[in-house]
Length: 481
Image 1 (cartoon, helix red, strand yellow):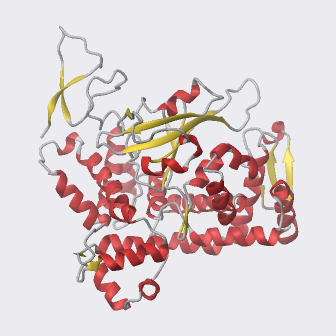
Image 2: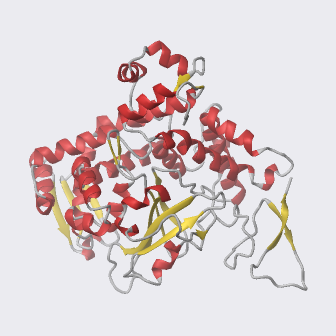
């Protein structure tokens, strides 16, 4: 962040976010850095500068990349603000980009609040929620969660998709089970039976019908459909154990999020139980070591840990343990209509919160090549380059004649990390031509895109009956004010 070792910086909000992401108190991080807790408090309130030496000590002590400290959260927050203020609602406001960057860096809480407010406004405008009606039915002073899914996604992002308490609990479970990967399902079933008096039963599809998993609390039975494959069955058992044994941990994590309505609170708990299940199947230390030694070969990792392709990709986005960090991946899951149903990032990739993805990203092409893993260098309008892989997955099997569910999984990282991946072997990453993509059509200002679905909301649409361009939409070069 600074080449001059004597330079002083006021980065209080950024420093505080780093400490919170590490799960440390001001006293704990002060001890690690060899300074007083009162000085940490002053740094975080921007009343004292932080020297380059302290930042270097922070990076060395907690295995942090200084480049990530400088840009990761600010870039994400700036992308969110840029998306919000590109809306025609703010057309008459000439808001300089630098002011948005300043807001993203100095006031991340305001950025988050604006994002939630805009999300509620967007859903009300599109008729996707009954915001006004529900707000009218509530007592004055109560809060309204416009979109519980986005709320939980925000909470996961705030934690960098890493929950150390759950990692520790999952590793302790695997140590207690002392079971090889191929014996994990049996060991988990035994744990449920002996410790919680819960019997696991694999049930015929005609009994389970549209349900893949159901816990019968009265009969103390965990019922799993025969349509669920081996990795999925182990995951569901680990999920149930998480609910039974980690309730206190879940409550503590949810409590740190502040007041939540019932729906996002329940969804957050389910998300944490899913996280625990994946960590139990792929314990952090063993999985991180294997990922590094195998150069992040997803298919081999799936074989070694008896997990699915999607499960491994998702798990790779969580490798944020201090002193044992993995590549900071981002991941998404889309269907063949372009709907995004999963979105995780431990890096800086600017996912759109209010739209789909760019059709030029080859994650969408996997439906045409279902048995191939595709790779691609992509470049955003700001010049940032990323390396990504993508593959179509089928899960779970559906009985005939129901349509077989298909999803495309995209996994990527900043180009500077790509050399660590087996998929980039033999590639000259510096010279590789990147496919120009946008965050989505409504925010992308690239001209002459043959796959543009709508004009950018930041430009004026030009209509000319005498001309037909490559793109379906022509627009002015000047931004609308």
